[in-house]
Image 1 (tube, rainbow, N blue to C red):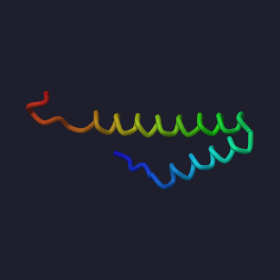
Image 2: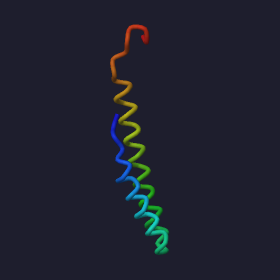
Image 3: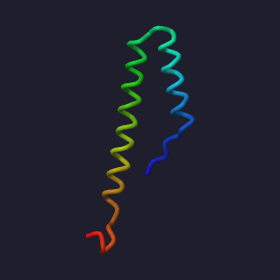
Image 4: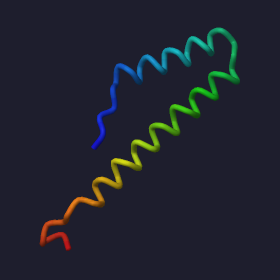
Length: 60
């Protein structure tokens, strides 16, 4: 499983909030879409690594 750096994630969310406060909604939405795509890729990688894990005999 990958480690999601909560501090880094919080910093990126703060950046998006700052952009929203500045009134640049298009950029804020774009940044959120990028963040969402990265998080979904991480989730897919985690799911793939779990599914590639050898199963125990009772799980077959």
